Image (cartoon, rainbow over all chains, first blue to last red; front, side, top):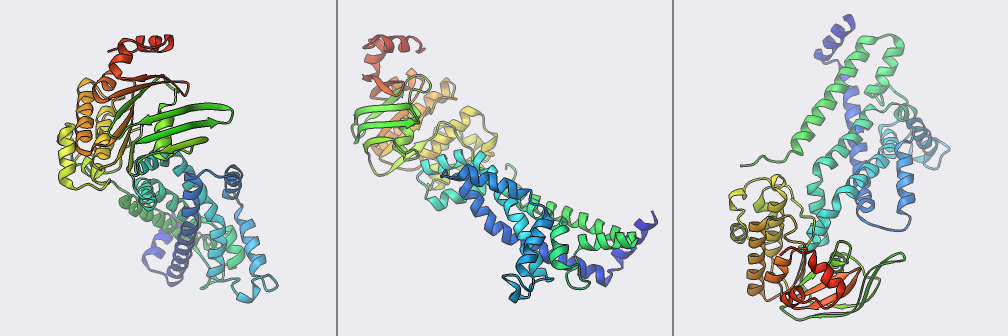
Length: 228
Length: 217
């Protein structure tokens, strides 16, 4: 209970380090979710609405990558950005940018897999009706997205959820450096190991609070207006 | 005019549609009947361009509209559902009134019953002018009153636009009242072709006779 009291105290005292950690976490999660959705949603729409050779294999591959262990993604990005790696000259290792790259690698398959499964199941009647009315391809795609906005919002939220809660990949490529690449999950792990439970608990509660606020906002945005 | 020559649709070894020759005149209304899986929907989907044929040629007019068998309710109210095809609000109001849906105009389309949704789907497709109208079982979910409204709406649209109409149906009432010609399909092939009344009263062959006997007029 004492830890909970300390956690609340820390929250309301607006601790500088705590605010910095929250800022890095939100920045990283925002960019990794945005990039993953920009890459993953069009690909998911393509797989979900079209028939082509090799589709079954591609779906299996994506489903496999959806379960990619974060440490493996982290290791892969580490090898790419290490001093002797192919992108070593970019000097991105132990930066937030490298953490974003690792998360994009992890989250994009999730976005592709979830959005393609959703569109595969629900887009056919929308496409048939829209094309039957003589709407253009762009108009048909817009209708599909508009009809599926609640489900697609869930896809984006799942991506954000995975991003903000991820620890393995970001600790490998970010290095959990204080005032630089430390995010909430890596900080929780560190503070727990040091026995500083109040700080870890405060971060845990903020993590939950951010998740709740993001979900509430998304649910509001995806809400269909009521009847007149 | 629609001109079909050697039109085939196969799924692997299975041929679901095989029409050596079929011509439909401009402005003609043709009803397609037959048991489930006889190729009615396949023919309409091939003509709509939603399905690719396995062989043969089809000549058809440029502007084609297709109403699928599975009526879909887009998010939003009935007005939005009708106007998204491109018509203005007054035309949407007129069609909703014609199909007796005016009282529900501001309700969510997803809250409609099956028959209401089918009438809404018809409103949507009739809100745009075309040269060829393809309707897949437009009265499948309607009660007697709903079917009457649908038939009247189709007749009015025909006289307004002069378009050619193809309607797949399980309803002899629809075939008799909305079509000039009836084709009965059996396993993807044309079994009977003629005026609806003639086919219904004096079927040409034993299979058609047996099929017609199952229809309740």
